[in-house]
Length: 157
Figure 1 (cartoon, rainbow, N blue to C red):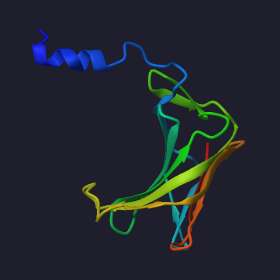
Figure 2 (figure 1 turned 90 degrees about the vertical axis):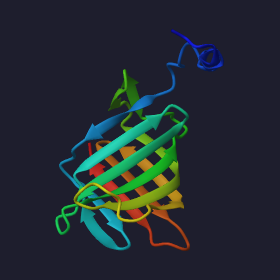
Figure 3 (figure 1 turned 90 degrees about the horizontal axis):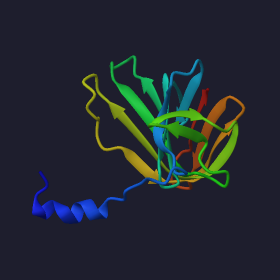
C-alpha cells in the first residue's frame, strides 16, 4: 500500500540505472599487501575496490593489528580516470576489467579499530595529491602533501 506522502518519492527515483556506471565492489585477499603510513610499513590482508557509480572509486587496504587484536584501514579515493572505471560489475559483484589503469587521487583516510571493531578516534581524512594505478597484477596508490607524511599501499591481484 502506497501512502499519499510517498508519491513524490516514487517520482524522484529513476526507473532505470545507467548500465555504463559501475556500482559495486571487489573483495580480495592478496598474497602480498603492504601499507606505508608515517614512514612505518605495515602488512595488510584485504583489498576492497568500490565503485560508487558517480565516476568515483575507493581503494581500501585493510590490515590486522596483531598487537591490539584490532585492525586498521588506509583508504584512497580517486576519480575513474581517463580510461573509465577499472571494475566490471554485474549485480554488484565486480572484477578488475583493465590491467592498465591510473587516476588522480582526491583524498586519503587512515583509521584504526579496536578488538571490538569500534574506531579508535576519528579517521584522519585529508585531501591529497597523488595517483592510484593498476599495472599488470598490482594495485598501488601513493599520496603526498606538503603538510603530512606520504602514504602508500600496494597489493597483488
